[in-house]
Image (cartoon, rainbow, N blue to C red; front, top):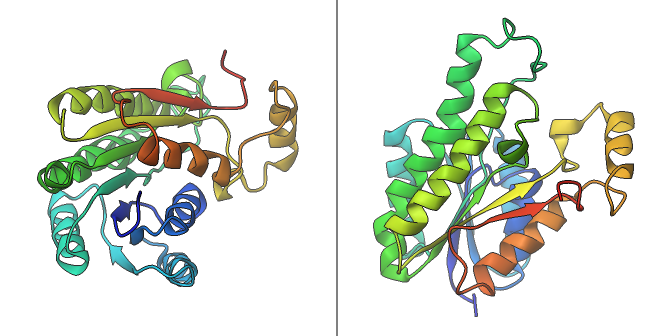
Length: 245
């Protein structure tokens, strides 16, 4: 069903992005991997993807810069011949306790909103025309923080709430040709939580499924939305082991 299609994954070299890349590659999808700073990781993921028998290329671009995003999308379409799937996985945060209002500096707001909100929109806008042609789909990586107001900082939670809002808006704007959905993970075992093993273990034990998510758990849901959910758009799928019920 997905054989020969092309996906662009922002922040595709590590964590959830890498897991989605490998999951889709196993289904015959060619993979364009975007990165901003993680060049070595992106190249390693590219090699892993190619070992599964599909084409893969890496593209450096800061998603917060519209010009770089447009150039990247143009290159992907030129290199692969078409673009069918966009996964907006790039994201960033600053860890600031929610009670520390003064600690949430103006530059932290700017950094987080630039990548998590503007970057998401820029990528969707740049890819929209091609995705319409291909009757493709978009997956936006939101967060449970966008629904609960919890998370690494108030600014991060706000950015993920905006992610969800943009998802719903674009699902209407790009219909009927393009489906747009979001995934809202809870805590995921990626490098973001490195050094917090005891705290993460405790969080996992408090969920009904008694563990935190792996990147592969999120990739399974992304695959389902891309390949199996042809009548689903504008939705936010929570993947947190039942913690937010």
